[in-house]
Image 1 (cartoon, rainbow, N blue to C red):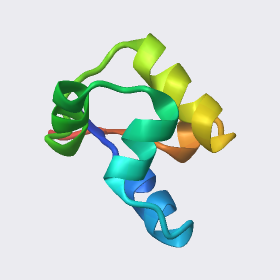
Image 2: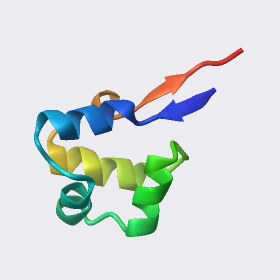
Image 3: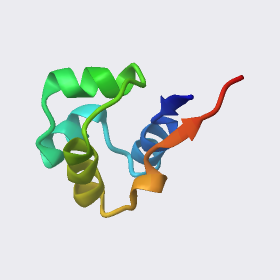
Length: 68
């Protein structure tokens, strides 16, 4: 099972926002943004900050991808 943040990147495109804009409004550290870009795990606190900044639920920014 892996994590995918593709929903987040598509949401940013739809809202005409850059990743730098997201980092600025959510207060997420640059190294955390790198982890998100690499589809790596981040803390629930980070996900909460992003969801709050974008006014969305967690299922709108990420998903689990099951692999066999």
